[in-house]
Length: 326
Image 1 (cartoon, rainbow, N blue to C red):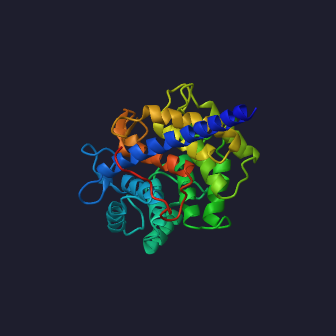
Image 2 (cartoon, rainbow, N blue to C red):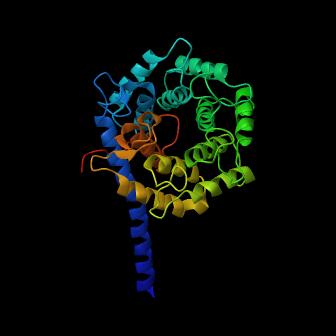
Image 3 (spheres, helix red, strand yellow):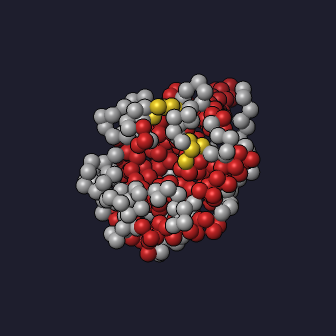
């Protein structure tokens, strides 16, 4: 009897270690790749050598470096670029998501308070009258994905739930939900996984209960986009994609009953990772739906796995990730 109990205990320890170690190894390799992709001037591009250095990929890299407490001298160079790259209107590239991700990165690095405040004011200035946010300032139609990313940034910048900009954005998002529970990019179009995942993440950040019907419906839709290999598709019937999977993991990590979905997602990411630690995706819109090995997707995967490892928002963790080449 004691032998059976001991073997059961040992099996539990081994399985638990394997489940934990595999994502950590994927994260470590991704972080090594991100570090090697930095340009000499401290910036990152979506794809080094093919696309120019920009604020958004630089912000994503700064975010994950500081989350993991590693290569902080490289993160500081990235921060220096971001602070210089801010436009007079307070934006980065007149892009709402780019501005939001930069605010998130600066908050993670605990620096740039003035720049953050100017960025928040820019977002207030370009918010649509109905509460949504467009991709480029005031151009085009409001997009749920960008609105959710902006909400996430406002939360990390400690803008309260009763702030008019926050209330309007949440109300607008709730009005975008489709009957299948998912969220579209543009209101009235078919649901997609990335938009749904970011909406779930944003709503939970602002205190929506996980069991709230409209949030639970979104989670239920998101689960339907998971494929047999464990990865999540941007939308059915498309194939699984690492960036879409990273978004889904960030949303589902808040649900204890979705642990198996999360585990299968991390397993997929481990298998999809390239030998140099990078990931291939067609998600960056600049790629015109052509899948490429790129830094943006690798950063989002690192962000998701870092959150799963308990590394949250707001500064350097106490235990830096061991990124020695093994």
